[in-house]
Every structure is written in structure tokens, then in C-alpha cells.
Length: 273
Image (cartoon, rainbow, N blue to C red; front, side):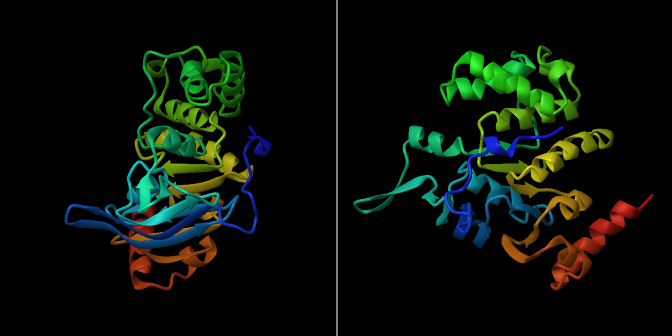
């Protein structure tokens, strides 16, 4: 199973970050969820984000896709300001069409699969390119069949979601995101809703996608997976980036006491019978 990296649009300059997050804060009323996040991600880089529940990991990912608007700060994708533009009196929100255009370059896979139950597997993958990218139905179907083959589900293309296991549904969700030919893929706990025996089949697809050069931001509790596929691992707590580095250092010799405590608790739980 292999994904063609040539279908993935490249960043304009390999020396420039594909994702630039600058001083991003997010409030929900009095709750301060993100507290000044600064982060650059290079084209082709695989970044895993770990941390306890409530640390702001999912909120950060949702801000990168502008499903949540940052309260303060800015996010750039391929050098383009996300969700806003310069107006006469400062920055103003993009209209829905312009925001939708930006989002076509960002694929996101959620904890829940969110497939359309009344559509076949192939139709679930085809619908985005047809409705958003305005490609022909024939081209969209050809793209869907190719991607379903690459996630190991070619034989399920005419099935309906209810006929699939959770792992199969999540692989369809990955194919659906890839059908939009994104430059960036976001994974928000993509295996957390799966039975343990189904986790591996989804992680295998994600690992192959990483090996083929896709830029990825991955929120995960799968520590071994993060260690194996990531170029960099970020530990978040309390809405802040506490520590980051290559997986060999962050898992092998974390510097911050909070990181050490979190990993000790997580790894101990993983080794329990």
C-alpha cells in the first residue's frame, strides 16, 4: 500500500514553514484554552502532539483548520493568512467561499468517522471533489477508487458505512480527506473511538501516508506510534507547549518534570497486564 506523494501540492519554498502559528490564544468565555501557541511546521514534517485531556491539543488542531477561530494570534498556511484578510481598518473575517477555498488544502480526520450513512463508501469519497473542487463525477470516481485501493478497501467501494467495521470506516474517512488533495493532514485522536483490535489497521494507513511525505499534525495517545513516525513530538499541558523535540529525546530523556510525569503515567499504564 503506497500513497503517491506527487499528488500532494508542495509548499512554495522548502525553507519556509508550511504551517506558521503565531501567538495563538483561544478563550471560551472565561476559560483560557490556548495560551500563546507559537509553532512552525516544515513541508513534509510529521508532528505528533501529546498531553493530558484538556491540555488544548484538539482545540489547536481545530484552530489550524479554522473550525475554531483563534481569539488572538494568527495562523498562516503556505504563507497565506488563514481565515482573515487585511481590510481598511485592520483584519476582517473571510467570506464563506474564500474560507472554504483555504480549507481545501487542509484535510482533517476526526475521532468519529462522520460518514454519510445514505451514501456508498465510494460516494462518500467522491462528494468533496465534486461539490467543492467541481471536478467531474467520472474523475472523482476514479480518484475515489484509487484511494480506496490504497487504504485497502477497494472491494468495499459499493458498501454502505453501516456494513463496515469502525477501523474500515476510519480508513474511508482518511481516503475522503485525501481525495481533496490536501497539503496538510490533521488527525485528531483518529483511533480513540476504535476497539483495540482495529487500531492497528488505521495506524498502518497513517504510517504509510507519513512515509510518503505528507505533512501531518497528529493528536494521539498512541505513544509508540508517535515515537515511530514523528519527526517531532510536542507535549502540551494547560494550553501551552511545555516541551518539544525529536521523539528519541522527548521519550528517552524529557527535560521538563511535567513531561516526565505524564510519560511515566502513560507508559506505566501501557505496560500493565
